[in-house]
Amino acid sequence: MSIVLEGLDFSGTAVFEKDSDPPRAPLQLIEIDVSPNYQTSKINTESEKWGSIWPHNGHNRVCEAIASNLISHVGACHSYWYSVSTRDAKYTGSMLPISMSSESFQHIAPYARIPKLYLGILYHKTPVHIFCTPELPPSNQTTSPKLVRKEHLSFIIHSVPGALEAVCMGASFTYHFTTRTMYIFLHGLSHPNYHRFSTMLENGAAKSTPFFIPTLLIQRLLESLLDCLNDWHEQIYSYETELGIRVDVQETANRNYLDFPRLSKNVNAVITNLGYVSLSCAATVRMLDFMDKVISEYGTLAIENGMDKDEVEEIQILLRERHEYLKSWNQGLEERAKYLLIRGQALVQTVYSGIAQRDSANSIKLAAASTRLAESSQNIAVLTSRDSAVMRLIAAITIFFLPATFVATFFSTSFFDFSVGRSGRVYSWWLWLYFLVTILLTAAVLLGTWIMWKNKENELAAHFKRPQTKVSSDGEASEKA
Image (cartoon, rainbow, N blue to C red):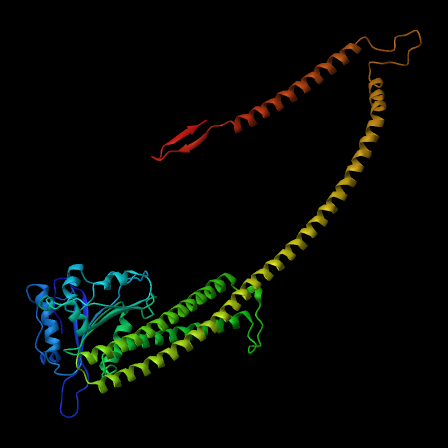
């Protein structure tokens, strides 16, 4: 069945029983899918049995038509008005927003008997389980609050916030004892979980009493946690095998080639998820204890509203047995999560130990390389010292013979003639020319060397004092002194 409600993005499911003689017909499911993408409205064959739901002028009339149409064909048996808003966007912890406009929700809330506290509870990122007073349609708002609380059993359960794969939901349940109708508004299930849950209802999982529906949600939550635990158990086993700490695996891992950053990241992710399972299990215990209170309150109000005592007690027994089964299952999951958490923590210690061992081995290798480098440097220093000794010896010999070499060279020039007698002049008159040329050449060499050094110093100074080029924000280059 498809309807168009002015941009309302809403999925709903109505499940109810019909009297038949004999036997009783199975639960029948009618889907109400409303999306702003619909171009036309179509009614399938199944919905034509119960009459059509067609767009009306105004949300109130449409919502009233939906509610009355789904309930009018029930007879004396239990009926359900079951509305689902699935979660499409990326999950951030808060269950809000609901995939419909605020105005549309305000119009639907009285007909779905959604309490005023519902939106506030969805905003909190924590599990909540409370009794509350439902909202009523305008036609029933004259009923006194005391009578409303007597004729209705209304409560809200909100699971632990979780990721897309987990069952995260906030649900409002209101049971009307006079018409024996359960009004349910459920928000937050992902599409796969929603379809699986709808299939469970189609197959008659809540045929005995509508109060089985909250337990079905809890059961789906535990199934999801079980699947997650199985997956994380396999991951822990694979990491233990990769690290070579499994007794039943003979292969020894070479830790020099292990990707420790990846292992550390993955193991920490598993431990975080196991912590979420422990949190979810603890919240499930409180939720099931709360559902026991709901059973007791149901028994009290059912008797006050004239329901058969034996029927009420039978329903209470069925629900309590179901709750005990779920509590036992939940306890087993919690204990398994603690066991896997211990193994995960041991893995973390092993990873960090492996990192420390590899770092220690690298440090030893580095120290050995440093020792070899020091020895090589020492050898070079010894050889350099030997070369220096040889050079000092050569310099000493040179200095020793330098005066004699100078004297021999000087007196062997043509400025001296020792063949003349004692009365003759041994040195030439041009001896002054030797000293003049020598002094001028020495001065020229010293001056040229000084000029070259000074120019080099000026070039280096100019290089370091050169202004740096800075590019401004508009792309133009500017100089900074």
